[in-house]
Amino acid sequence: MPAGDADAMLRGLDAFMFRVRAHAAGRGVELEDVENVMPPLGSAVKAQPTAEGDDETVERLDDELAQAETFSVAGGPQTWRVAAGQVIALMKEVERLRFLRLRLGERRRALSSVRSAVGVASRGHRSSEAEEILTGIDAALASDGQEAADVVEALEQAVKDIGTQPIRVIVEPLHRAVRDLCRSAGKEARLSLVGGETCLDRRVLDGLKGPIVHLIRNAIAHGIESPAERRARGKHEEGAIVIRVEQQGNVVFIEVSDDGGGLELEAIKRAALEKGLVTETGLARMPTERIYELIFLPTVSTAREVTATSGRGVGMDAVKKGIEDLHGHVELQTTPKQGTRFLVTFPAGLGSSPILVVRADDQNVGIPMLSVESVAGATASHLVVGASETRLKHEDELLPVVDLAAVLGLRPPRTVAGGRLLIIHSQGRRVAAWVDDVVADMDLAIRPLPPEVAHLPLYQGASSLAGGELLLIMRPDWLAARPEAQRPFGGRPNG
Image (tube, rainbow, N blue to C red; front, side):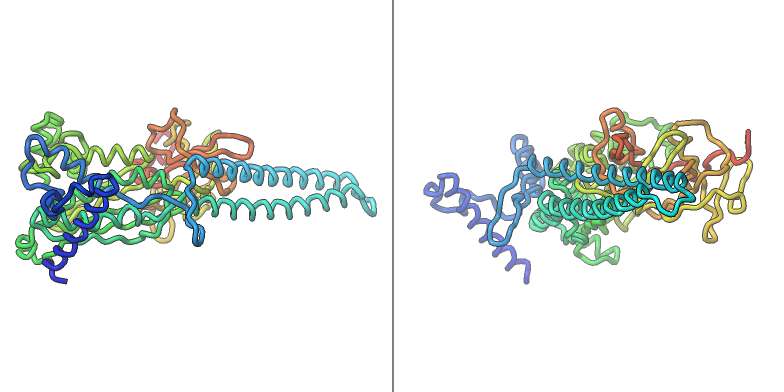
């Protein structure tokens, strides 16, 4: 459809919705001519702010961008409204059932031990009535445990269906806003979504609106070039802003990328120096990746002039804080004249995930099973021990070996001896984590971190074991990206 025709149709739709909202507010009879009171098409962004209208304009823009469908539960021809507190209460009951199932497993293992002891005590007798009774009870417990597992799984899935919604509900309303932003800025861009059917906790979706809005707005204001500049660089006149969503277990990855001009390194340096956030000496010693991350500091902006969408010194610091409020983190990668990519990682919220419970020194730690590639014994034949590092020969690679207990600060680094080695992969990296033992693999509900450890970046959440013990769940990406993953620890004693 020609752009002019699309503008006319959208203008008509705006006029219709403006009239509907006016009638709903009791002001419909006062609007003789909608065109005279309705703002012009694409006016959500003004080229130059005015002293008194700029803040209001940006707030209205954020409202438009963050608008999403009302959460409801579809049930055939009817729709029921469900309070968030009711869903949370149901999820807590599911967790109680899960712990009950875990306790059933513990009881069955204890019963098996008793049955074995009775069998040894009654050796030499033709039959043992007590052993037969115990065998029958063990079989009944196994059947009850399986039925409990089926009930928990079905109930958990039902609660997920109520308490979650696809991420597309907060992205679909952005298409029109992106178009209007581009029209106002004299640019062209299209928003695409991959993995939009990924369902997330509705509370998580609410927290994601703000960061996604800021990332898209910055992509248009700072990333996407004008059509003429894109033609000069051999690009299509229409820029591409792509949101990709992927979930692995209880961890969600959202990538927001654009094919624009990338971040300007010198502009970031200049802005940081002008705000007094760094010194010339500190900047000279700073790696390039760290300099790019300065955009997450408050008041840093690379815009050359102040508009309603840029140059105001707010945005990326709000993105970082919003993601951290979700117990997640954000990373960026940029290539000059090619584009920028932001990767947001955070826990999904509702539901359980397969967790491998390991022992580091005398403490149990959980690691998401989806990041555990394999588990092997720490045998000397597969280790390459040097004066300053130890590496593991694995599939024609030499992987760095990290002492998990030492990384967690539970003990000084030790030489690899005994225990188990976990091959952990995350975001294209692999590392061998040395642990004292592997306890079990379980399906556990991951909850937000307790306040005492909420500030630590190495944990993504917490859970509880059958006996009520608190279990902290590690972030595999944090472990794989640590400096110890490159030079882990002394390979030889006193090395």
